[in-house]
Every structure is written in C-alpha cells, then in structure tokens.
Length: 334
Ligand SMILES: Cc1ncc(COP(=O)(O)O)c(C=O)c1O
Image 1 (cartoon, rainbow, N blue to C red):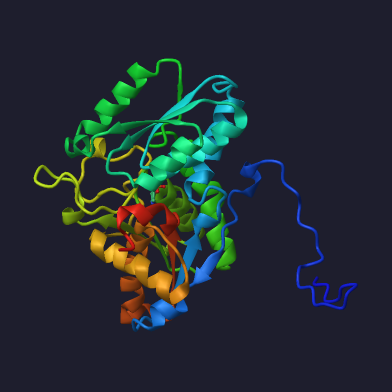
Image 2: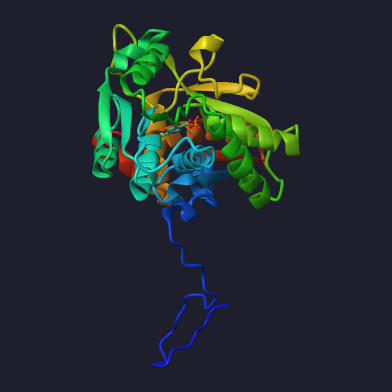
C-alpha cells in the first residue's frame, strides 16, 4: 500500500507497509531479483527473454554471501566453529569478502589465500574487513596438482583453523539447491528454458541447476568457461582473465572442484576475457547494470543462446555473480 499524502501536502511514495528491521547482515542475504535485459538483447537481434539474476544485491555484493553464511551456520551448528576459532579458505575474492564480513560480525579471525592475479579492489575489501590475505602466485594453478598442493599447505599452516573449504564443502551446492534454484523457478513461474552460469567451485551451477532440472528435465544448463587465451599458461601466466571462473571442458576429475557436478551441464561454451569485458561494458551503458567480468561471461553465452532463431520466445536466466565496482582497478572498464 502506498500513502500518497503527508501532513504538508507533499507527495509520499514509500509503501506504508512496514518492512522488518533486521539485526544482522545475514538476514539480508538471498531473495535477489530477476532483471529483464530487453535493450541489450533486442538491439543485438535476440528474440528470447534474457533475464539477469542479480546477485550483487546481496549485502556484500556477490553470490558468495549465500554460501559463506550457509557454511558458517553449518559449522556453528555442528560445534566446529565458535568465537575465537579462526577460519581459512582459498578464494578468488568474493567468498573471502563474504566470509570476512560474517566472521567480523561474529568474532572469528579470518585468513584467505588469494591468487596474485585477483582484482586489487577485492584484496583491499578483505583487508578492510580485518582479515589477513596471503597472496599465492597465479602460476601454481598451471600445474594440474597445484590446487591440491595449496590445500595441503593451508592445512599444514593453519592446523587450528576451521577450513571452510568452499571447493569441496557440500553445504555450498546445497545452499544453491535450497535458495538460488527455487527463487529462479518461483520468480519465472516455471517459465525457464536455459540457465547459464560459470564454474568457480561449481556450487551455483550444480546446486541451482539440479533443483531446476528436478522441476523440469527439459531445462538446459549451460556453462560459460574461459577460452584458452584467457587462462594462465607457461608463456603467459597473467593473461586478461575472467575473475573467479575456471575451465571445465576436457579436465579430469582430479582437476575439477569436488563441488562441480560433471553431469550437470548440457552445453559448455568458451568465452574470451575481452568478449566478457565487452558485454560487461555494454550492459552498463545500455541497461545501467554494473556487473563483473564473470557476469560478462554468462551474458556472452546467454546472448548467443538468445540469438539462435529456434530460441525466439524462450527464457534464458544468466547468473550475475557480482558487481563491476569490484573490477575498476582490474581494467575491465577501460
Ligand atoms: C566472480 C565470480 N563469478 C563466478 C563464480 C563461480 O561461482 P561458483 O563458485 O558457485 O561456481 C565465482 C566463484 O568464485 C566468482 O567469484
């Protein structure tokens, strides 16, 4: 209900229905909106409905707030985390930011291992939240066993900490199954044909994707992965990258994050970083939506799907993991 009068006769447009006052940032997590990108799609000859699941409306501005809170809640419930015990994880930034914020509000010291290619903005935010950052050379991820070695190093260096382990902790995909997937299904009223996401830990695509497939097995799950030129290599350990997401096609089980369900994707498409950046700049100018580079990747794939003539009239949901404000120093916006 909207109250349109005030005692001074001026228009008042705030709803008169009170919203609950919350006592903790965790109460602001989830229930993110779907935004139809009709200008972006139509101006490129696409006739499908392209919907962005805008995860930067979470309190720490990324999809990772969902899993950070779920993982901490789970550890507290199981008695594994209590005030004074520290938490530790490997992160491309967003999980570190989300965990650091919740940790700060609950009295847990926090430490994060971050690739030295991570956007400097993310590192600054984590440090501003009072957490410690350990920088690890991006080149270690060229070695197929690099990640496993880093996990071992973390466990040795932090024997008393709780390793939140977003790459393997089953709470991560479970949270997307419990919240992200159902929100999309509910808000589209079941009218969804494609779901597009990238794979960092695989939690989003595996959890939300499984929920959606269970509602309608015809929904196609499409993964956006970085093309080869956008991956670190011996020749170029610091290419322009799509932050937070990894290649999945053609990799062995040991090289994939345990939280990525290998059966979930119906299609995997490669996107180069420059293409993803270009889409991030385009939705900013055309829709006023300020998204990060991995959202540029999902939007590139969503647009390709939307442009296929056979998909006219269909609905494509692309996940927008975070905000472009996190990449101002990373060159995504020029
Ligand atoms: C910016 C960004 N986009 C996408 C993802 C991928 O999400 P998930 O870990 O659920 O696969 C991540 C994960 O680290 C991320 O940081």
